[in-house]
Length: 350
Image 1: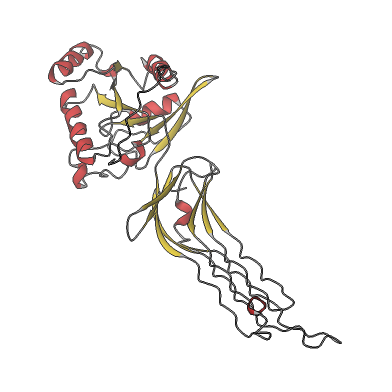
Image 2 (image 1 turned 120 degrees about the vertical axis):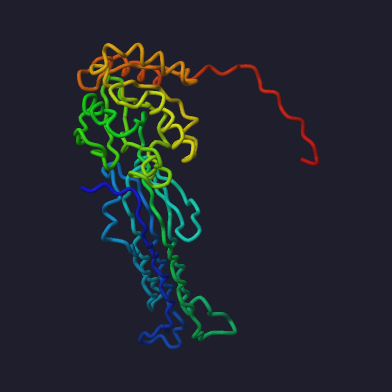
């Protein structure tokens, strides 16, 4: 199925049913009085996170979603049936925006979560509601109100523990193929990865990681070069980024690093502030110059984080990297102080 991570849809809640004007007419019961029932409420539209979905492709040909209208009231004080709510499944990680105002309406992060995006109309009142001692034969009734209509923009942001970041052909897809069951395309030309891929890494029975691989970035991606920056949003919810550099490239490691740093800085949204580990890949093709390239990179940059030399093709250094990732991501949270926190003094002007 084609990967789709952004789509616009229109949601229309059902209108409320109208009230009924009716009078009781039964044999031997003269002047039975009003018995018109109320209408039913209109159905609402909910988005529901479904773990069986991982793309928004279902909305390519279904752009308008309508809930059922409430039924009209009936005689004998019978209320119209309520319109059925429309439950729309979306993948976990979906963000919902109001199209016209770009307002974030909510996020669906965990399976089973619901978000109300269009509320159904309120039912109308039947004439039985208007009877009184001075109005014994009312013919008044009210109509149901229309349901809400909205144009929404859905954005899918993948949920992963670790994100892979790098230039094209640095070996990110080869890495995720080696450590998981994901099978992204691997070839010796740039941009073989055209959409994000997720892979689940089983380290031990009680430990696993979810890794997200996005298409490579190039210089000028912020201005739309290559595939641009549209896939960087899938790294926003990751806990840690693996910054891949190519040891076999003609570009120096420091130059590759600065290109990505510049594009991340232009993209913003906190990606530069995330914890990042450096991965020097294709060590099998640069066995003799690995130590020298690593030393030159550390001298040319201010990098002070972890550095791993691996070969995604042969597997050299990969187990050590995976176990360190598992230890880092599954580490218990730091112990909190048991001393009571100092309370701020109340001030009437605050």
